[in-house]
Length: 338
Ligand SMILES: Nc1ncnc2c1ncn2[C@@H]1O[C@H](COP(=O)(O)OP(=O)(O)OP(=O)(O)O)[C@@H](O)[C@H]1O
Ligand SMILES: [Mg+2]
Image (cartoon, rainbow, N blue to C red; front, side, top):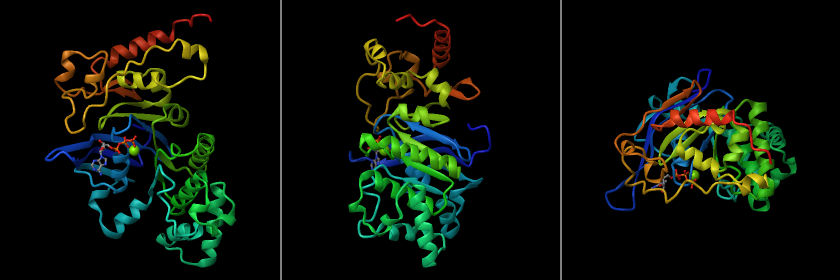
């Protein structure tokens, strides 16, 4: 939990889909609770298919959760409807992974942004021109781009336009769903830096969804780790990355390549093995147990409770406390000289 009252609080959210296998259901988000403080940058990581996008989409109303609540600014959004709901929802904007799919190819960039401005009641043409200029400038694009069409832009430029469009409605929360992973490697860092700059300047809270743990580690103050629909570890990013205490998080971190060739040469073999189990038939108890190198009989019995490791770090694993203590002991071991 953040230290101050959350701006956005998701409580016990469950989102299910009908599977293509007849009569089966996929519980893509299973009893998830997360929160964001005002202006906070929080990471959400996990393998492909673990439910990150479904969680993000459920928060903004693109999917309909079966149960649980989305509480924004102290109001449970399920108690609102019509205009009041739209107004609150507007404060939470979604930035999609694919900048090619998220813009209307028949509208100029200026028209796309103007459409967002009209939504918040700004109809004056001169005001549109001024704000379009300001927004494009904010995302590092020249004003001349307003006359162009999405197909004339590069992937990085399109993602900047998508961000400008989101900002047009003055959001307080951005759900950023892998917003840089579809971009060329060379421009990822630039767009990532833009997110960090905007987040600081505008004090917008961000839920930053990513595969790339290295990216999240640097950019966020807290991180949630998701596995097969559930949050299995959460905490302050500095603590969680220094002392990952769920075997799944440890395995994810072990798979990050290092720039240091000595570390790469000594990298242990990956401890995560096998495929993610089918979400239509998840393992009983701890969902990671079928791939966990440390699984015991008890892990099949019941889903593990969250073990609080510090006031700002917890993990759902029966041996999380032991793993944490081992991590802590290892902190004090002098590194072997090279
Ligand atoms: N509209 C849908 N209908 C049926 N199943 C769906 C639907 N959307 C998602 N799923 C399933 O829900 C699970 C979670 O998918 P989701 O897209 O949320 O994962 P993700 O963590 O965002 O993955 P990625 O990292 O690949 O984007 C997957 O098993 C997926 O197949
Ligand atoms: Mg996704």
